[in-house]
Amino acid sequence: MRKQYSGTAEDFEKKLGRVMERLGVEKYQCDWTQGRGGSSCWVEMHYGGSVYRFENSTAKSAACGRGLTYASDPFAAVVYSLEGLARAVEQGIFTLDMLLAGVPALPAAPPLEPCFQALGFTQRPESAEEIKAQYKRLAKVMHPDSGGSEEAFIALTENYEACLRAMEEAQEK
Image (cartoon, rainbow, N blue to C red):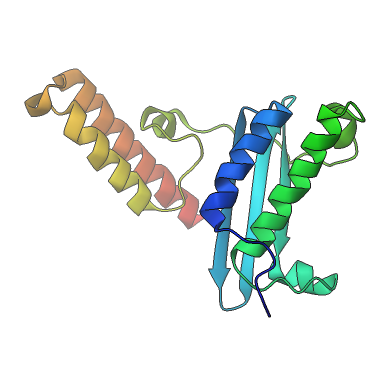
């Protein structure tokens, strides 16, 4: 099978940024993975107080007869689909509100604990290693020997320890 869309996943990330700007979406995120079972991707956009998720994968494309096999192809297909929505909005055919009216929004995320927010996380990290890496990055700046204050470093350390405890408690459940 051949690659369906020319460009790399990074090219399509840049294109996605331009498309989101055209749609007036300020906050969005995306990811793609490639594994033995194929590749998959998703784009989440925050609009009108809700979060909408658009997903694609090589398995989904095979199910509808498309047969996308390259890692960046499912992602490119999502980006081009969103570009089509942007085009319809720009031409005055629809508003984004109209287009999203039938799309189910994701459920609201549970509130993030203050200790994670204090370490700069916007969502709960998946592992203690992520917490440790973030702590080390911040400690380099906030440590009194690096120009930070003792109070700020103590607060950072307390929040770091609270995050680790929260992760342990979640794993025990």
